[in-house]
Amino acid sequence: MPGEARLLVVDDEPNIRELLSATLRYAGFDVTTAADGREAVQLVERVRPDLVVLDVMLPDMDGFAVASRLRAAGRRTPVLFLTARDEAEHKLKGLGLGDDYVTKPFSLEEVLARIRAVLRRTRGDLDLPTRLQVADLELDEEGHQVWRAGRRVKLSPTEYKLLHYFMVNAGRVLSKAQILDHVWNYDFGGDRNVVESYVSYLRRKIDTVEPRLIHTLRGVGYVLRAPRQ
Amino acid sequence: MPGEARLLVVDDEPNIRELLSATLRYAGFDVTTAADGREAVQLVERVRPDLVVLDVMLPDMDGFAVASRLRAAGRRTPVLFLTARDEAEHKLKGLGLGDDYVTKPFSLEEVLARIRAVLRRTRGDLDLPTRLQVADLELDEEGHQVWRAGRRVKLSPTEYKLLHYFMVNAGRVLSKAQILDHVWNYDFGGDRNVVESYVSYLRRKIDTVEPRLIHTLRGVGYVLRAPRQ
DNA sequence: CGCCAAGCTCAGCCCGGCCTGAGAGTTTCC
DNA sequence: GGAAACTCTCAGGCCGGGCTGAGCTTGGCG
Image 1 (cartoon, rainbow over the protein chains, first blue to last red):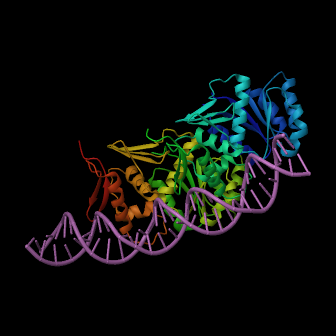
Image 2: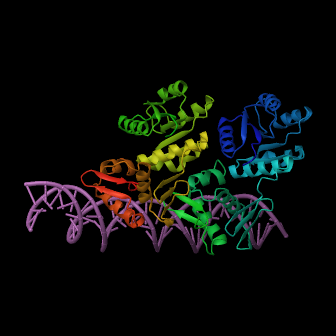
Image 3: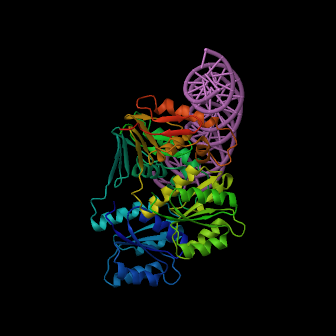
C-alpha cells in the first residue's frame, strides 16, 4: 500500500493518460489527470499532489516550463518526466533534485518503480517495502539485487523486471497478456513467446532448487508461490 | 451478488447477445444491450455502465474504435472485448489497463470470471469473494488452487472450471445441459458424456473422502452440497 | 428377479500449449 | 572498434489435457 499518495498525471494523449491513471489507481494511488500544461498548473494548486507525472511534450507549453512554474510557486513537488528517447539525453540537465525521468515508450513496471523510488526519497516513505521475499527468494529493490537460497544471482534488466512483477504479485496467477502489458513497453508488438523465453531464463537462474517457485498453469498463465499455505 | 453492477453488452449477432444478456442478468447484473457501435456509444452516455462487453467485429465500426470513443468522451468505463481467436494475438496491445478480452467461442463461466475480475480491479470490489468454500472443500480464485480436507489438489483447466461452476452454484441441482452450456464453449458439438467423464475425474480428485459432496440425481443432474446438519 | 436406461470409467488418439536451443539483430561497455 | 551481453524470433519436440467410444455398473420399475 503506497500510503495513499496523491499523483497528478499530465499527458495529452488520452491512451497514455488512461493507461497510466488506471495502473496507478490499481496500485493504490490517488490519481488526478490533466491534458495540458495550463490545466496541470491549476490542478497542482488544488490537489497538492505528492508527485507529478509529466510528459515533456505538451500542446500548449513545454513540460519543463510547467515544472518551473511549480517551483516558482513555491512548491517543490517532485516530478517524474516522460520523455522520448532522443530528447532525454540533452534535456535531463533540467531536472531538479528529487526529480527523475522515464523514456517513452515505457513499461508500467518501470514507471511504478520510479514513482516509488521518488516518493521514498522525498517523503521518506520508509514503510514502502524495499525488500521482497518469497520463501528463500529475496529481491532488494534499492540495490537491484536478487538472492536465491542465500546465493547472489545476476539478472538482466528484463529478467529483473519480470521477477519483480512476479514477486509483487506472489500467489496471484498472471496471464501472459498481463505480464506483457506490465513488463514490456506499451508499444511492444511481438508475440507472447517472449514471456515464455524469459520465464525459461528466470527458471534457469533462480528456480533450479527445491522448492520450485514459478509454476505454469496450462492455458492460464504463471504464478510465483511457495508451496503449502 | 455482484452488487447490481450495470453492464452494456454489444454484439451484432442476436444469438450471442441474448445468450450473454440472459446469463448476465441471471447472475445478478443490470444488463442493457446494443447491436452496433453507434447504438453502443449512445447508450454508454445514457446508462453509464460499470463495464462494457464489446465484440470487436461490428457491422458499422471496429470495436476498438468504439472503445476509443468512450475514452475520448472522458469515460473510463472498462471494456471486456470479445474477439476471434486469431485476432486476439496482435490486437491485445490496444487495450487500456483494466480492460481484458475473451476469445470466441467462449464459455459463459469464462466471461463471468473475466467480468468479475475486471470489476474487482476497477471498482475495488474487494467484497467479491475470492475464495469459495463448501464443507472442507476450498477454492482460491486468485491463485487457481483447490484443497480438499486441507490437502492441495491439482486440477486441469476444465476440471477447475467445472468445479468452480459447481461451487458457485452449491446446493443447486445442475442438469448436464446446463453444465455443458456454462463450462464448455458455446459451439461445443459433442455429447454430454463429456460432463459425465469430467464429473468422474473430479470425484476421483476431490471426492474420495467422506462426506461425499458431488451427488448424482438420476435423470436430473448433479449437485454439490454438504450433507445436512 | 430381470430388463433397460442412465451413469460411470478407462484406454487411447490427437491436438495445441509450452519449453528450449540456436541464432540474428541490437545495444552496451571496455 | 570489438567483444560481450542482451533482446527477441523461430521452430522442433514433448507432454498434458480434451474428448471419444465402448464396455461395465447401477438403479428404477414392472
